[in-house]
Length: 328
Image (cartoon, rainbow, N blue to C red; front, side):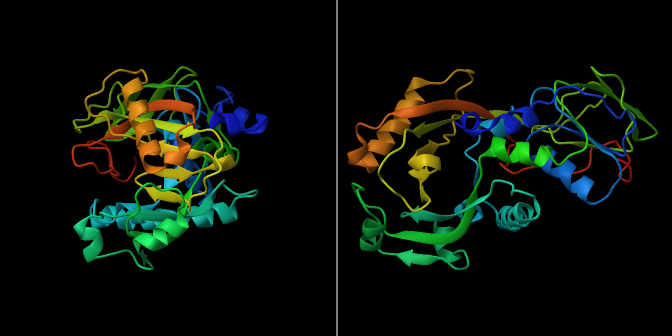
């Protein structure tokens, strides 16, 4: 889905190849997903010196390229800790700033989120600022064709991106990006990372940022941080005539060309790398049960991806244990 929307320049930006590396950068970012590219660009814009980003595959080849591309902090109210929601809200504000400050934009789209009842009790007790409460009749008028309507919470000004397009646009602003360049190992001396070995030769950076999703699995860096991967399925219809107001949770999100995006699922017991037809059929059944008029709609895209996961379900942003806090 996302790759098929890219132009030739964006495709090239995702995979520029190893290129000619600066082997003594001030900042080395390991990992070319959304977080790695955004962090590298932030370091570059902050004038922290020379910045190099390396990625073992092409940019966005992991969870970023398989994501739904939704930036919706208010959807997490009541189901995630308040500090996570606040982080997400700050992120949304920064997305808007980034889009405005990037020539040609960063591919950000403003959209509404419609959360159908039942909503978590914590959401009802402390709702997002600016929420609008809709009756079942309001929802029926706003989302025609639903088999069963319910009351809902409506929040304006949430967001979405085509994650691959955004990564390509941001990476094009970076001075040094090297794909097909995995980090094989590191050397630590006196609590400082002094070398990172790669296929293109050793890199001796001033500071290293690991943006690898899960804790980096790299020789010389022994981390005991509990983490695993969780599989999820997504599917997108062909263009449909049904128009929905942005994202109607938990049913579907309208994306480019009038298509409906379903998912992603959380398949904790599925360890296969392949698409599970039962999971896709579950998404289709959910769509048709909600919108009977789409009984003949077909999925144009079906995929699965692996997402980083920690036991508490929260992201980890921290210094690497055992490495000098001032230097890496």
